[in-house]
Amino acid sequence: MFFFSRAREELIFKSCALAKLSPGFIASFPGGRIEEYLNGSITLTTGDCKLYINEIAIKTADIHHHLIAELPKEPSIFISLTNWLKAASEVLPTTEKPAIKEFSKTINFHSLQSEIQFLKKIILPLNSPVVFCHNDLLSGNFMYNNQSKKLYVIDFEYANYNYRGYDLGNHFAEWAVDYSRPDYPKFNLLPQNYPTASERDLFIKTYLRRSKELNGQILNIEDSEIAQIQKEIDYFLLIPHFAWSLWAMIQAASSQIDFGYVEFAQYRLKHYFDLKKRFTHKTQTVIKNTKKYFYKTP
Image 1 (tube, rainbow, N blue to C red):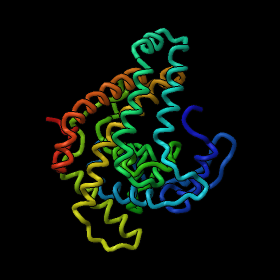
Image 2 (tube, rainbow, N blue to C red; image 1 turned 90 degrees about the vertical axis):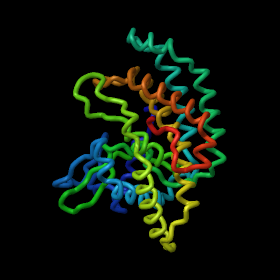
Image 3 (cartoon, helix red, strand yellow; image 1 turned 180 degrees about the vertical axis):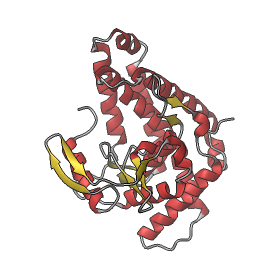
Image 4 (cartoon, rainbow, N blue to C red; image 1 turned 120 degrees about the horizontal axis):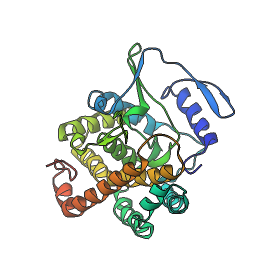
């Protein structure tokens, strides 16, 4: 109840299904819906992101080109961060789970509010275009159909209009999170898996070509366009780690799923502050030399 509206999700899914961005919509019923079955499809894993760079970049551009008239066109990320922080500050301290209560004592919610202001300060001047975004482009939300050789996107719970840079930064942030671990806490945070400079360049160029094709523009790509998206990704990469840590705090207090939400919140929040420290030291280097990325593992 803290994160999304099922009615809005169905509206979005129907629209994306008609546009062939997602599996087809068949019918809905109270509490769920029936979607097209994609025979021969595989769900991507974190490691697959490197193998399907072109396909993911094209699909991301397709999503960003999609229009849904019924949705407000204001960027949603800072509204979400504010709402999630408020919810986390309310549910964590009041939970009956002793371990969660102890965890909540380590979180300074007032201090986290100042982080949202810091993020606004660095993000707003970027003027990243506001487009329709999936807002959760992790590997598990991509399905590749081996028969049609097409990539599909699933799970539009968090989809909304947002800054282009957030969707791109979030996708690359998810390259560093492996959800295939079988034992507790069911994930690994692997910063060494962040994309290399060549992988990022390939993604960005493919994304720009597809965007220009969809807009009926000449497919020539300027260095300034590449540099702008590189800069957006560098800046927006901070936000997903912060956002999903707040998400995990709420889940820790409310979810019954066997997943290490406390550890997830701790690790991603710590990684956010590690990135922020590197960001504040190297921002000028990133701007002057777009081949250097502040999050790159030494």
